[in-house]
Length: 176
Image (cartoon, helix red, strand yellow):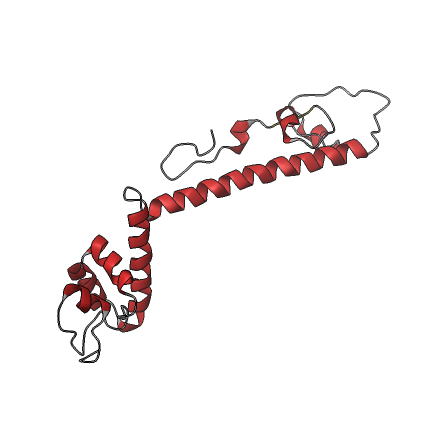
């Protein structure tokens, strides 16, 4: 920035802003909070080293990432960005569960609206014979769903929870 106006980092650090200041292109003087939070979390010296090691065309993305990570760390000092990621993964898992319940409700309604044709003779079923199940559109896991009434309330649907469990990267189940 030179002699005109020091960048936000030089202003905060109370030093003269040189023409080749590594912070000047990314921390303008009109947004001092941006550098202040990055400095608080990472330190000016560390940020300077990181930026100098990167090619010029990647520095803007690095600064953007540092600002995001610093804001996340201030909001959640223990988990930072990982806390935000875990929250979003949990939300996705819950939405997938809701989608599975809604799809099961739709299937139930469709099955109740279709006229049932029962075979006149009951064939002998071998429990290991999967071809009978496939030919007659039966699922070997039909006992996992219990459709007690025709209302659309999700309270009437019981889904075997083991079939919907998801593992997190930490090795424990996300759905309990």
